[in-house]
Image (cartoon, rainbow over all chains, first blue to last red; front, side, top):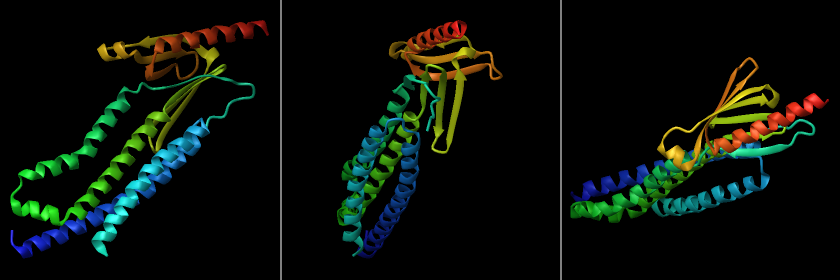
Length: 76
Length: 175
């Protein structure tokens, strides 16, 4: 693979990764609203809802921070 | 949210068996590990491709982190569908909440005094081993059959419903 081809493929990989990350983030916002609505309205035990939210949003926050750091590294 | 009648008490809340959700969790765990397996497998690629992977490692890790976020969300969608799918037995009613999907929820309700017959079915090796099956309730109402699938220990639930049904009939006769 020539240098030019490598650079073009690299740019394409970065664009795909950025687009995929943006798509995942938008899906996260929409699905989190829907899931949170279900947990708040249909769960019987309030304490469990809080634990559930803490686990879901805690792990998601870690992944989003990692995604943000990698995106800043790539595009800035 | 389920609203109980005045003086009504919840006797039992049971969920469907964990086996189907465990199957989904294993598939999703495999999907989560897939990018790492592909990274390991990339060692056999030509040197020029490996150089590109090394050069674009930040982009690849961004792809992997996004993939993990999607898997994490899919697991919680599956888990929510499992967790909110419940059977509630009160001292007056049976409420079956069937969470079919995030936008499909079916709630059936049956008064205990309408029960005419109770039937359980545990079919197959794994259901017998793990003690789960279906419970069918014949009723005197318009919808004559009420069926709940894949519940844990259907025999104990059937006995509890039968016990409460008898008690309710005795109470009604005494009044």
